[in-house]
Image (cartoon, rainbow over all chains, first blue to last red; front, side, top):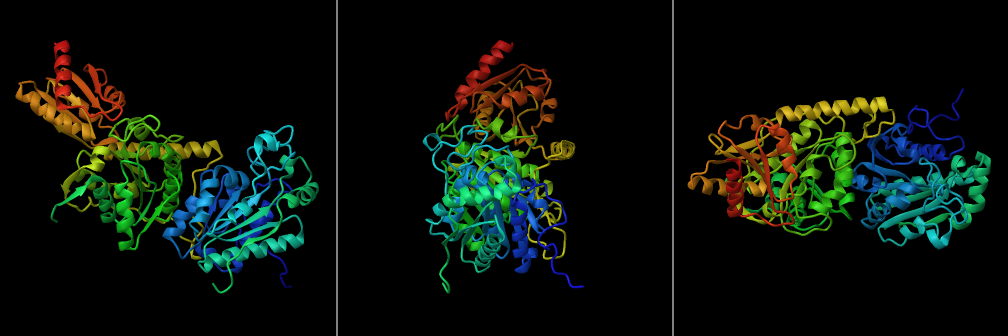
Length: 248
Length: 353
């Protein structure tokens, strides 16, 4: 009997702690599959974040280094500058990357650090209990925006990919989503491309992945996927914002 | 090796390279700028890497990642910048990684000034970051000692898998003295089999981490760290006793201040007043035992610091109430003169008698 589907070698056997319906598991799997397919698991050092995916170091089947809130790009810089031949990636949520760690991600991109960032945007702080993130949509309720986010006092949701795409050193910037199968396939393609760019030594690459948070959005897993499609996609358009020209 | 005339900041950089440090991550702040400038010039010559980070916070986290690879890494800063680095130092101590951090301190609080000060004693010796942790603090008094202790610091950091701080002030950083580069004390250093360098498919993944959500597990980790710190307290304490055999007045001073106090001690003795000096070289662990070695002749202790009084707390703990403990300090970047220290000692001796 031939095996048609199995767990990727890129992930450990450890059971994840994510809430039912959360798409972190899908994104983990995509990163794991890509690292396995590229044959680089033995050379990879991942930098785990703070937030919901704080325990990511237990799930990826490669060397892992925990970072403080927002500091993953600085930690990854230290690793990659000393081990330029290794594959280095950061895995960060929107609170981690778009709020407390904005300086670190912008300057890592600005220096064109040769590592890959997986940026999981679910428009809310998950682990701390549903507070407003810089990425929370206007009108979206959060525990620190009980009446819904108000642009007049909190600003508009931060579009990190668009912002990073203005930086010369960010050679690959793409926003993808994992709310349905065709988009999951596109997400994997973008993640693979970002790692390939790192292997080619071209510079900094980031993939923003739109993700769900059924628990803090107060929706079922299926409703969450619909909410993402109906509310997040119009404000956070999918697509490639920056890619290195072929042959350069 | 022949002596060379070097500025303190540059000499510390040269000592780090001599110790095998090839990676420096830092951010400019006065009065330590010659150190990163030196590293940016010299490290490429040894196939090393210099990165000017976007902030002190980023720099210390680059050190955190860099130390995780098992390489010898260093950062430097000055007081307000060191305040920003405390988060990273706590993580590095929690994850048990070796690195060397240099603080060429200046006056505070806040932006303070740029003149030499010793007001970072609490931040340096009490664990400025969160949680139960300690790290060695070397306080060199001369540039030669700064060089020797910097070289030693990398070995000590590797031996304990712990950050080590060199605490000097702007005076030591900015002045020039002749130095020579000596070999470090030999230590049997443990293999860095914990480093995150890629599994190469030959071992289980290494994880560098300071998170333990289970309080029972975290308590165990804390007690294990504590045992390591206790070991440092036993083995790594350094101090100098100067003119202490028959001292009546015992000064306690470190770094730049200790040099001024030595002059005051000599001048007091010329006047027939028996003065002596206990000079802590490690501020943590503090040289407690030196205080049980104080001779019967002693009548008073004076802690002299370029601050409003921080080390004096440790002096009182070490003294255990045996002798009256006084404090003389000049904060804000003011440097005390031997004359004012002598005057203060005479007043105290007058009162003691």
